[in-house]
Image (cartoon, rainbow, N blue to C red):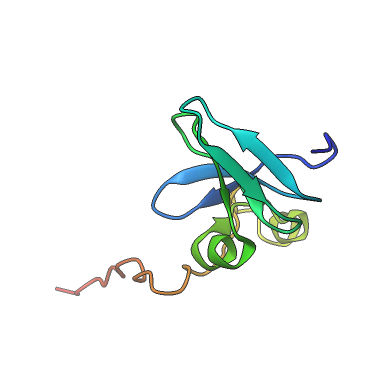
Length: 103
């Protein structure tokens, strides 16, 4: 795999880092299991350091990238670097809304 393809952090219930494969890739993990993927699939590193390959279709359906949108940060200074305002992935509940009740 080429070094020019940087790790990108994605979110679901857990944070993972992933690289999209630019060609076929095969490796054997520490337990002797062979993993392989094709161009477009993702090499995923979990927080405990475990590496796995996920098919493009499954990965893109589950994970949402955490990317700073530079143009959004200039026009909306309240947006923190490294966090984008991306709607929740499909099948994930929306965060609770706080409603102030006057009194």
